[in-house]
Image 1 (tube, rainbow, N blue to C red):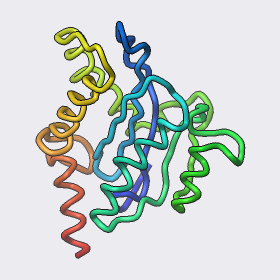
Image 2: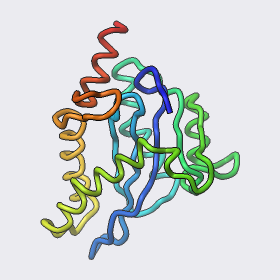
Image 3: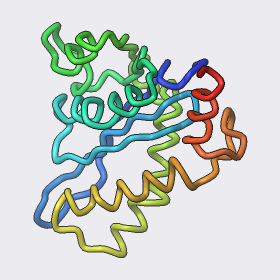
Length: 181
């Protein structure tokens, strides 16, 4: 999975996080840029398409628009939150924003490796730690802590893997933007 620029190919997934005593089940709707691993995350009490759209609408597209970068394609699995009829909310949202929707082969999560790797990282470094340390009564409280962790992940935490080579995701994105500008 190659991309030559930030926003060229994003990788999206949804996974069950935990059950809050008063908030019910919580799911993470995650989106990761395959160019430099810049990540976005939105917690919601459902896996519905509207929540998958919300992370794109509220976080992802504004980030790229502020940098004057187009989002060209999103790779997802074939889950109900991403796929369905012609009138499916996620599919419609992508169409309205001229974003290509690519799907993985059925039951082959490793073909969506960027977001799968992120899911493992956020589970290990954030959720397993925070869910032991803190009693969360609301999704909003957990989201606030996730937002702080995402800031750390994107702007402070070096990524040793391919493409970033020890740089932070924001450095990889901004390096591209400065070379293009």
